[in-house]
Figure 1 (cartoon, rainbow, N blue to C red):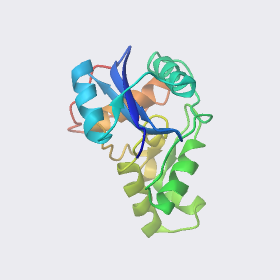
Figure 2: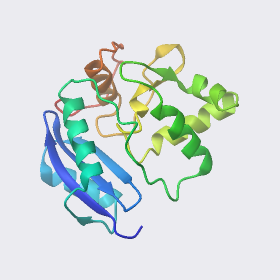
Figure 3: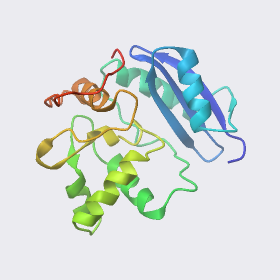
Length: 185
């Protein structure tokens, strides 16, 4: 991607990163314990991007992420995303997930049905979630397994991070046995 930049910023939950191109946001890094770790992770995920000063839309995204991790209801739907290079089905999944509002959840199966598919499509929805380049802004943490089970979460901290994010939104879910280690938010 040409002209891709990134910015590392602090929230009440740790240091996040965001990357963008001229077309929109390309990557988001959930909180890390230090700016150095967040930058290392962001540079790995947005290879070729250079540190930059956020444009107004990215500045809005940073402010919204800070509000989110501060526990304030936040909507990211107005932000432009650059999903160039993503599979067309994944783009459809991400568009559907972006419509899930603060404090709401759905399941992989429900999303699959909304997209006109069955059980095999639910597995593809899961793959899209696991490969989400812009977590939080594409709120994959709001997608649960059947029966309201937490399911997986490929972000640092795994299921524990997903639970904490949902708790910020007032959604109470049971912690799975043997949950993965998480960051401090």
